[in-house]
Length: 352
Ligand code: 5GP
Ligand code: MN
Image (cartoon, rainbow, N blue to C red):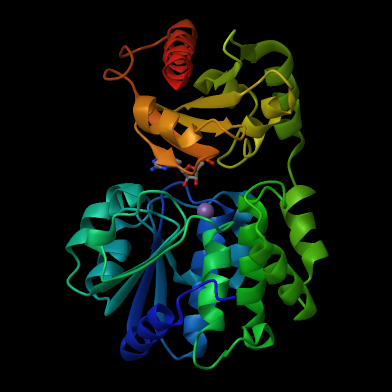
């Protein structure tokens, strides 16, 4: 069984072989899979003698910093040093876009990525990839994560030849970590190929206990205090079976929430039998970031596309509600909850 078309992989590695300076980009608000696949690729390309940098719109959360590890110095963040990301993109011989289906997902880096004169490669597992915008497209949606997709792509590389034991140690660890976060530790989007990857990486010596401990036993106490309060006092369940949780800026400040510390909250209400879809909204200065999760048979992706200016996967998607556009310019929590209640009710009526 070949997860990746060998011809496509051969052309990707041939193109990569010809490039000297390579830039890797990923989506805004990078998560474990975005960082795992980008950092995993960087460490491998460095063994080929390439000059590699990673460009991000905004910094990754502390919760996934262990994946970046020592690679941190080659990661440039637009929000911190826009001249560095612009220089990296403009000077590239080749650009890899990881875990994003279009340049727009890199937010403020999107335009520079699109305009860059070099060849561009997409490696992604989201629905609706913008295939026209890339020279080589490795897109597969029936796979756990971009980290898994990259793992199978790397197995096709001429110097790896199917032997996971030949992957750099840092790449193997980053890929296992990225896949673990995107599957919610083997709970969602798991395929036979996913277990095969995990099995071979473990056999190759990756310390899974260390990865699991860094991901799931390393949070600050305030995450759990906020989680308890939201489930007890703030979660609403609509008659349509939609759980809604809103984290306004004041609450986030009261609990000293940092980026990434609410990761996974949106999955919790799906444990309730009557809940069919769970929606978590997080307030930012100009918008509410929206996370949507659904049970099998209900499309979180379609709901995110139709009502939240976003998309993603069938059961896990995201988007945004912009203040002064989708909502009033200074919306109260009642208004936001009302919007979500109404549009999800409409969404479920359309389903029948
Ligand atoms: P999360 O809720 O964890 O932020 O995102 C869930 C999934 O939806 C991820 O795969 C993420 O890449 C995707 N996603 C999140 N926000 C957006 C968005 O605004 N647009 C699109 N197309 N996908 C998104
Ligand atoms: Mn992903």
